[in-house]
Image (tube, rainbow, N blue to C red; front, side, top):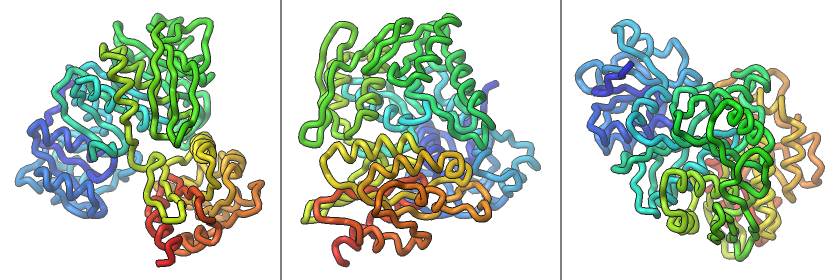
Length: 465
């Protein structure tokens, strides 16, 4: 059924996902109200654009624009059911929907290009947006991070394509009907929601079944689980193509990575695209980013864009906030980066990319969620041991209740490198990191929580401020 979007109230409007759909609503002329627990840059930006936003949650926030909203948008995972605005919406009979329901409504009438997978969704979606823009398109988009070049996470475009992430963490990707769907990889995660790996894998099969009759599923052939998902989709009659350094006997390879190498901090990528060879550069290091870029290339070509223009756009891609984002450099050559990696596979990929630059690597890592830390403690220990030195903070619980007796020593006690510091005091972390750093090192703050706030204090500590 159609949703009345004339007056929309968003709870948690400052979040990376909510702020994006709010921006699109404002561009389309909707009256937008919302609330968040704190004042922040996205909140101020939306207020400047015309949104009515309160800091703190209260039932009266529903009437910030002078009348009640036609719909209330929430994240069922992050917002408790006793939130006063949800209670108020129920009392007034106002429909309450999830962000994914709103995004699905916003994408109606567009060619829907959706990126799914355990890892790499934000980076790959962002690359696709930049590539399409370089090819002369003006896609609408909603992504989970802020594009460095555009300075935004969402846009109401004039073109026929709508590009977005399809988040599997709460099954919300099943709300969409993609015309072009990409699965970058599949590896068990969010087991606090899914319960077991089998249920997690199945949500991607169900997502493939949501593709339109004339649509295409694009899978990474370097990832066994993504390729197997593609094979199952083929058997059910879905059009499937693959990409990557590998090939598959059942899945046509739309883009084969012939070669890639690191050259002056750039990845040089040579791709055979349906018989045509092309070369482009990436400013973000690592094989995982190479694969993400090829996924974006194939998706763009599937949408009808010129492949060489897409490749030129990928060469100009400057990254996304919190994805190997350079936060500062000192005169002695020491560089500090920030990255969102919070799963062992992501940590492994980012640290390998960092090591590929030839620098000595020091990581400041903050585990995210008690359930994830407990489930993957050994894998985290192995991945973090790729660094030359590490400071590991205590667990960022986010929405979870602390588990008595569980802390980050479940990781640090099993790491195989000598220079490991377990630092439970967040404010003491910059000094702990500075003690481990040598001139010319590459320093990484890493995790999905508050660790991103430490990049600047670490730079200050290294500079002796």
